[in-house]
Length: 358
Image: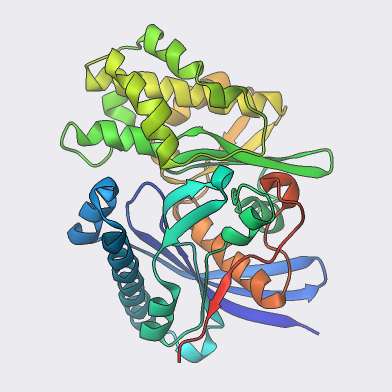
């Protein structure tokens, strides 16, 4: 029996640049093969009100966070409704919306992760079923709740490269070691780069030009490379709390923003390349906003012994939204959408919470 789904995948990452939407059709005509077709994609920036709150989460009360949860759910709904209208999509053909949500807390060591963007609000205002909260069940099963993207990397993009690197707010890698899939957050990505760029009055360092103009601070570089996280074996994952506690305090050792940018780019490049070289990978597909940072890609290429493959812009920008649509399709099939060897969970689980519109 052939199974078909059309899913709208939503991804809003830690970079806080907004919401990525991918309309993807899936069909399975063989037990272990899922075919996919990306029909439409679009990006919707956060409005200033929501972005201001996300940038100042520490100042929000518990009530403020709960209000923001509903606000983001409604914002997602407005984006999805606009997306459906713009592309003349019939809601009847959509099996579900698969929403990652906006991560504001990620502490698997304490048994929780929290992505806001209320699924019930989203379902009600779109009149489409919603699947969200993909990470919690994995954490309940003893896992990190992350990364979840590798199952999509190897089911949907395995012909493109041996390994996969996504440079979003954090940098994560996935690859196969013998028969097992290995994946983890290897280091920061765009979050510290964007934070530093914002000090110069710009949202991000386009193509890494500001970083390229700076001077490498070897003392700071040594401090960053000595952070204890890099000595831990996976499964492991990073959250913004880690940046605040372990990473950002070190940047005080150079007061020049350009020098900090230059040094952080070098640090990211070294940490990513260490992982890729240790895995003996010959080719790696690079996606996420960092794939457009020309200087960062140059520095990774300097250290990495294999070939970095930068795909077309749709895949760079929307791969994670496409994969979360896929996680939604797996949920509807009742199939696991995590990889226990990746997250450290005690078993595979079908993560997600289903919200009925009515």
